[in-house]
View 1: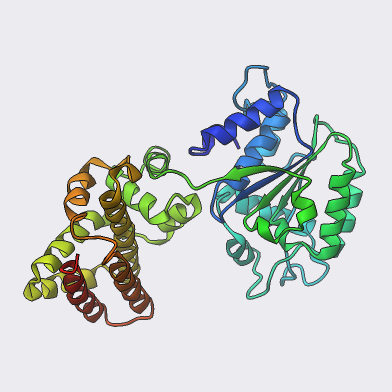
View 2: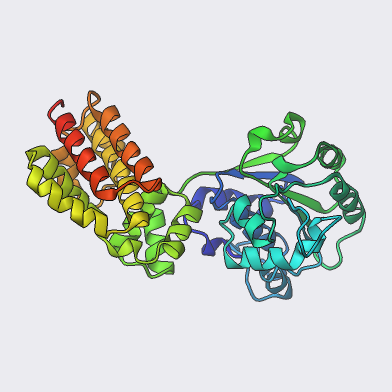
Length: 380
């Protein structure tokens, strides 16, 4: 994993690279971000950079060609270790520990490093069981760090979702952080750092991984995944900067991005403002043909666009990077979406999403929402 493989996060990457250049590598670092963020990807890119054998003093990224980089890229380096939440499965009916799921973890991460806990549980066939980092894991961890690095400069221990550690495991990790073994770096990747022991948080260097800007995610989807500009913009807005959400939408909603949600939403709002019931009925047929998953995405997209309209009306500087095709509509529509009706409009679209999700008749949902939106637009 290279830093260049990860969209955005320029400042975080710069800080991580500088820490290595200046020999200020903290023995324990906490990559904290939302589920679906680049937290794990950044931790892996940093691990690769740390042990890159061809790293020069001016290097901004790992080389990708040396034996260390190639092994870490395949997650088979003997000095790269993972501690993960696991549970018993049909393949591992008892004594479930991270080492027994090494092959599954490699395929999981190499396929997509932006996935979350539920994705991992489904991947290993956990059914409805909850994953955790058991107290038995702490014993293996203690044995692991007692050994010197086999061939690299640093022994690396990546703890994915440390908030799911059993208290005994958490205490073992705390002890290691208080008395760190030499040449060992702990990289904790957490989606809920507030659930960690305060004493653990106080002993790690935080690396805050924020959501991507819409333009950054759009560009990455367009350039890396070859998604057309308009569709990439829709996905980025729906995902609200979350890479995992954007990739899930891209892979699971086949055909969802074949629709131009922006044009459809603009036409819908104009129909509602004109209060043309006959046109609302025609639009409801169009809405029904989208299919349920696309209907949900359309409403979610509409919520995001409404937020931009409201913010623009309050202060155009709050939404400084509007796509060219959205600028005219958002500027004009901001007259009709104000603090007075923005809350009820948002609630209306949320309720429509709720009913569609629960298999209500989409035409009835759309017509009902249209009539209510028409009424609310006149209350601006």
